[in-house]
Length: 164
Image (cartoon, rainbow, N blue to C red; front, side, top):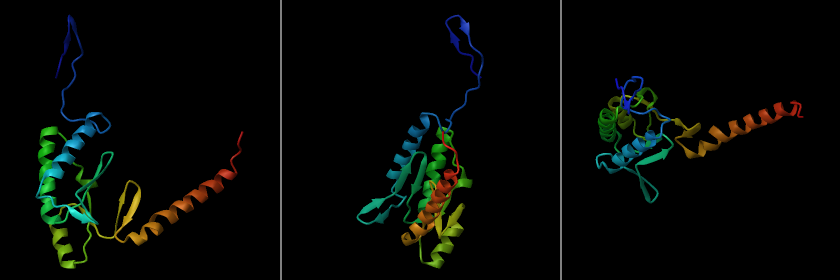
């Protein structure tokens, strides 16, 4: 407990805790520190997309790591995040972790599934409300068709609303 003193006034005691709430200004800074650390660790292997090597995609407080060797890279990634969590009093909600496995080798997929302790999907993953299928040719049918239907249903329903 802390009991701060301002000149001759004493303030109400309040508990001191480490860590930050998700919507607080310090959270993005801590998030960026972790992202920078992940980017620098050589044991977390990047993947090749076209001419670019990619390790992370970031949006707000969401992170997608792209791992070439998921068995070893995931282990190292979780170690790094765990160590950071001890210092910053943050921890990952492992219930929300999902790995999107992109392999055509059944044996390799089985080994990875045994080595990684969180949810693994190989068909599609939902990220920021968008369904990302393994095959990009399915992006339209997985997302746009349903979105167009929702928009049509909404506009049809709005036709009957009296406007002033």
